[in-house]
Image (cartoon, rainbow, N blue to C red):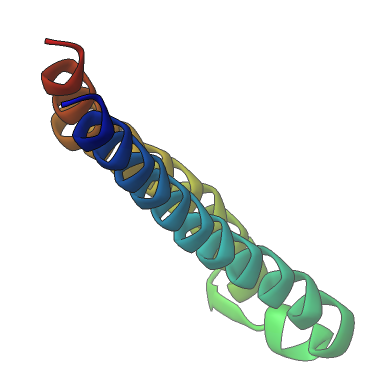
Length: 91
């Protein structure tokens, strides 16, 4: 019985790492992609979409929104799947 729980706990920890690494990779790509655009495509980011709003400002705001969404996704995943599985293992 203890070996089964230990194996399940290791599998659960591995799933948590996979989710965390995936979300981290997505965030790194978004952030550094935005930074690369700033470094190499200034004219593109300076283009006005509407008066007072450039593409750079919009993309910067979207990076922040994506950060919130990725955090929400992780918290939701952890609350519904990870914590439930951990609770089952404790019983």
